[in-house]
Length: 490
Image 1 (tube, rainbow, N blue to C red):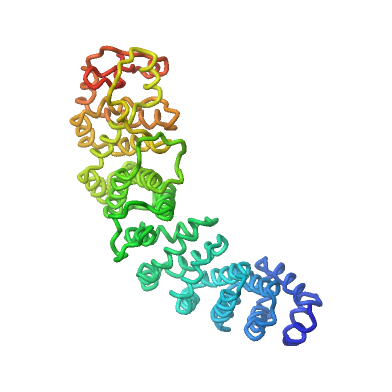
Image 2: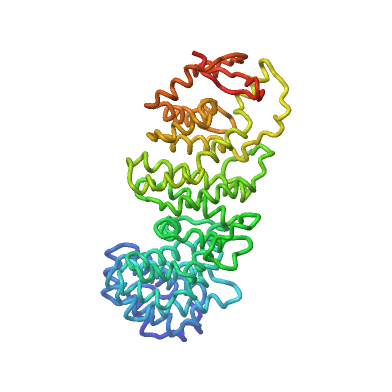
């Protein structure tokens, strides 16, 4: 250690740190003590020697003499000492550890070259302290919310996202006052910046997802957060900006994470009707923006914000519609499904499916057999991403599950053959055949009218391929529209 630095630091603190670590330099002492503090017994032993108080005193009174390496090592030791050791966590609060960490962060943030290692260690230390209980959480919250948290949220670094989200989630958990502040305008502005950072640099742990699940799923703040992430933010951020002609990459990213959350936690998350209708609104809006003239070459995410918003809103609708089937009928699920259906979900999906070009295998079968020119073929839409057709069919299949009214509605809208047409393998739509079979099963189960409608089909002008024949189906050219369709070969 530089003699100037050593002579500027208090001798009594250095002597004790050297004695406990059996070292002769501060750098070595901090490294040895950090290693000892990695175990519960080590932390307890160092707590009995008041090492945490020594480090806080060292940082508080002599921050200007601690170069980057010594500062990061000191903060790392604080972090380790506060990992589940109650005595150290309490000492941290009693010795104004939160205020000392805040001073460090402010000093680091105002340097020309941001020391991200120091920021990360400081946040991880606070995150460990926040797990100790209400008093610790409130002390952190009062000193950091909202401005200091906002400052930290704007650091575009992956290693700051996780501990910051951990602190925020832990502090609001079980405290309605802090939750209300988090979901207020200042809090949502802060979460917006976190989402921007995560969309750029990513995240490793689940704290970001947990935070979003509280704000967007348990609470009803997705519209506000989505609007704040717009390319051109709405003047009134409380209302989603539905007149913007584009979606931002951050908005697409937000929906991708929410889609993951819903898919992973279908058994323990129940979405509100308002949330479901908002997602339907996004899907309807995105379907008006997306260019369907070109066949997509990639699955989600595609890198196109409108297409990704379209796809992720559709996959969320798939999982929302599956919740009733997975849990059995519940009042909330029935209300949500009823609201989606009455808002035109089924009509929208059936119309989109009709407007799409046929699956690949049917197009090829048509080319192999009796090919008749179709002036409208160029007007058919293409799947904007690989899996779009599959996802539409999946939503319809989940809507059909044990819902007689939906079964009947599909038949009345001439959708039976349209859905049967989806029971094929399609290179542009992985697992389309499986979802198609699930959908047709749900369409016919317990519904004699739908079964009879298929049995009475008049078959003519057919084109067969081995793959289609294996399913008991064949391709037929509709004599009116000149478009191919699948029909029962029995």
